[in-house]
Length: 318
Image (tube, helix red, strand yellow):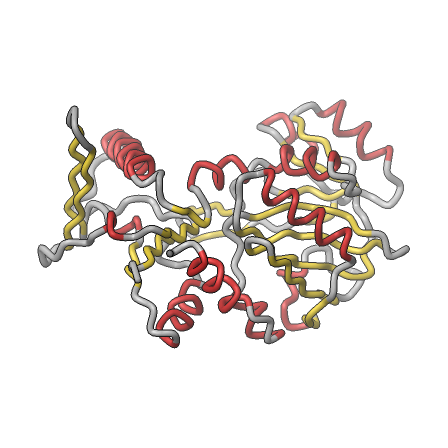
């Protein structure tokens, strides 16, 4: 059996669960975090008329045989690390060069079976695209406005008497001298600083009261779902983890098929989708995450997510 290759950011919490399942089955694998490059990894990419060759060596000069793996599990990546800190301009240059090299490495391994392909994963992160695709697949979506127009935003707010929410379009973390701040979905209140809308694109949606939230995991042809019950006043359940109830949930077959079709149309083999049931029990699609964590849900519900994921990887490691 060829060893699996696991590429993920150093802080990916669910990867440990995947490694545990692989170890339990005595399945060989390599684990590699992109943040190890270039400070802990020496790498070369050779291209000639005859072939392309990628070599990776650890600081201990141990060769990391990336080309031996037929199946690659990819879950996001950290920025390349640096042993020496230069001024801001040089660091930005080195960062862009490091990112370009890692992308070249991905292209060099393009013939492998990726879960998920890094380029498909990056494309799938586009939230407006996700919503448009879900709507075409027949799922209800919240009315959405992305704008930096105060006039457009004000008109949008007035359209929905139940209110609106704002959420990040892409980046949900801000790091400053005081630390890392995580931006959650929140209601638009009377004290919302309207003047800040002109500063950049703001991602607004109508507020939809929920009777139940759903986290749906698509792994190849398998669809597993968990239900999240939170107090009605909670807009984003991640802000009140201690107050929620999480349990396995059986999806309607039509909804399960729609989730699978959305995932596959985006070129993904794994995804975590966020949906909810409105107060009348109708499903509403919010977003799809190609690098969504699963271990927390597995621990809370007993859902065999790591096992199903390993089964899928092994099915393509023949």
